[in-house]
Image (tube, rainbow, N blue to C red):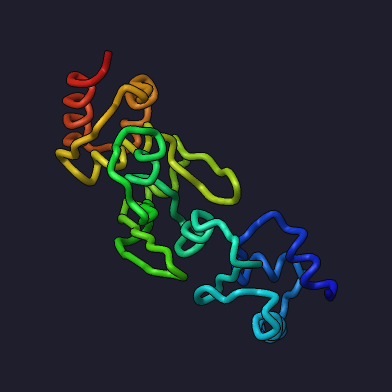
Length: 190
């Protein structure tokens, strides 16, 4: 195996963008970069998923892929709420906050982006970067959901930290959202 591929495989990322590959290979010429990537895709050493996005092998992280499709974006909504046990409905789709609304199918995965204003997308409050992708914590996902859906029906809100929610709700700068939040808090907070 040649040196360039070894460098890629030493990276802990399972998904690589053109920019990631250029940095790892220290390639500044976009034409050389494109031809090198094309060569390794043709040899099967890289898997081309979509424009400018590649996987090292078939066991890549679908969540890592999701947040590399559009930036800025982070995993939120039903995906995080289900992980936290706040909704019980299973979804194969990964739901994300992003710069516009769009559903995309890639390599047997479905990703649904929901548009949030830039002030929210660029605000890291209640988000964490782990395993090379960004996720909302349950409180941020709950607030994202009620920001976009006025009367969403949750199955279990006992896991929420209402103090964190009270802090985070301020970043939305929306009076109607505040009213919705306090209605949920009054109904479900201990």
